[in-house]
Length: 454
Ligand code: 6PG
Image 1: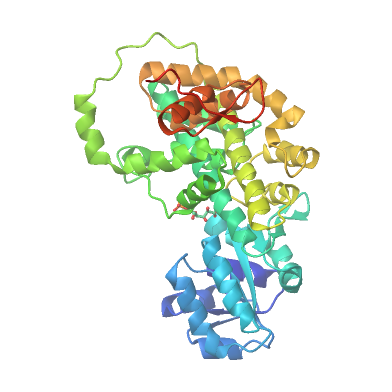
Image 2 (image 1 turned 30 degrees about the vertical axis):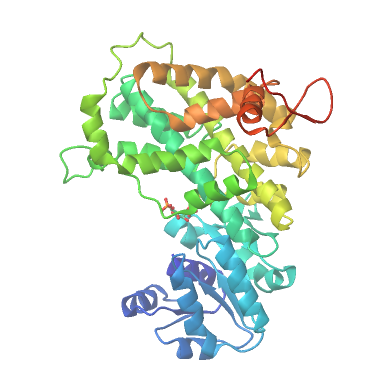
């Protein structure tokens, strides 16, 4: 990804130098940089010497200890005013720590979320920067030239102070998990409830590429379902083991949402679904111990209705993620503007879809404190989709097909449209066994009852 981003920046006419400890990567970059102003180094001193201070240095290494090691290897070669940009998927708390250490030593630091995968890095990623406006201004022109464009607008912005860029990227990935899991569930329902062949399912996804939910993840799913490796007897996707790995950004999103008290159940369900998929041996055992439902009543569900259910789950993923960003911005003082975030996600990133356009418009209408679902246009669209989501979840439940993200999305929407929830029961229980008190609907204050207990 690092060499691809470097090639992208160089292809826009900038002079760049690349550094990697791996000689094969250095040679690889040299081989791909013909006609561009690129130099490649394996030695950090030679790399630093090739650049005129003050130097912006962009790191693209996996999150964790290796980022600290990369910074440590550069430190002896930095001079005041030099500027480190971490373009990996670092945890935002690590970014805050690294920024304060580097800034205390007179160096600049920017946490930069980069989305779009390896191809995106070369062709134009979406980028979410966090830090000071002064530091951002130093690299803004370079980043804008390399970023994906949506109707000419570069998909990069300063999304807030401190580690806001990595926070927004973390939540982007949480949304990504939820969209991917929702797609997988709908694929499963197409196959096992509606009885579609793999080719029919591929055709359905292909049709959806030009529907309102069309976007990167729908497009790649259509291609995956249609792909046949000439060396394999079956379509490749049928041969892929059903265990989903994760590097952690989805889990971090869920953890932080729990800390901030923001409900993001569609994203939570997608994290748990990957974890459950990992228990393959247990699943194999239980598949013989717990009976599957008998032949269910033929569901009144069609593929197009399933597409509307999927759109509802996508809305939930976006809205939950953006609600979390709103809350984090207030709690941590990021000053993030959702209007910027929704705009830079319209192209280049993994979660891009046509829905981002009306979502960006909704973020113009809703204040940074209000829930996005209070936007009348979004509420109206969700109202239209809700019956289809309900039918899809009901048909899947009847057939015994797990749809954790679709189900969580339905409960999320049903929860938010319920004026009186059964939380009165929870309050009464807490008061009965722990004297925690409760509020009443008919008078102010905190009350306590013995609930008729001796
Ligand atoms: C992106 C992706 C990218 C990466 C994820 C995968 O926006 O380009 O999100 O960052 O593919 O880290 O995450 P998991 O390994 O956790 O699925």
